[in-house]
Image (cartoon, rainbow, N blue to C red; front, side, top):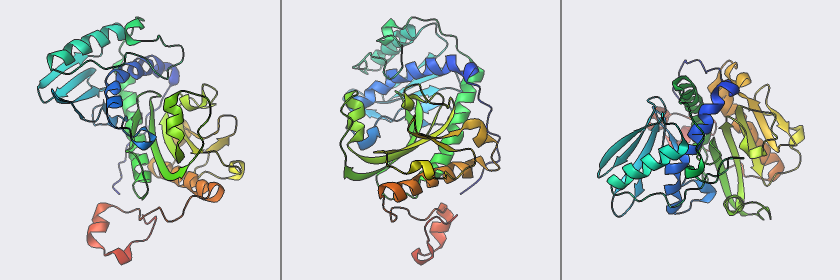
Length: 322
């Protein structure tokens, strides 16, 4: 695996919060199109790709056009990329309602239907719909750049951790509702979903899974997490015995009230090798799933780069080889 000698950014929640709150809302506009596509276990069909410039939807194939929407955080705009042409919208608008109106107008010019839902999801105390969100928003390019940097660094680490898993694993990406970067591993073992909560959450709990991710403000804990920015992990259903585990990185800890293993961003960025720390953190969570929830040990392939696999016969491949 290639290594990048880059410094991981300092992230201040107070500074970033206004931009995060705005982007979390506007990515849901294009994100709604993913609900028209076939459901993938774990909602893998909805995630946004972390690109060299921002966040992008998967391609959407419709009768009138094939299109994708690229939220270019480093450029301060949104590009609707279509087989019928393209349109660019600035992010520096005054309200979410204004952005939604402009998006629908531009999409219509390309033959793209409006999103079927106008609801704002998974954001506590948000207005019900995009059209109702008329709070003035100020676009901050510096905060947007920091946001992208954090997603980019965390995605590289989570992709490296996810690569050797042989079971079902949706691509690493940003969940546009909760606005966290997620890497999830599944095994087809039927569970009983929680009896309460919205259907989308209960449908995400149909089989056993474990998730490792990055969040700016941990939505998973319903606002009770002691972590504002950093890595999180959990195992579903939650097994007993997690309080006695170690988590691969000094500073990572189990928080029973939140039901999460948490690794603060500032602790991670100060690690000697933050990328390796992400992988070690994820591996420790998987080891916990094996030890406490009976996950199989034979779902992990070799952890090597493509050059190694192109030059060495299978007999030389061993799991977790660096």
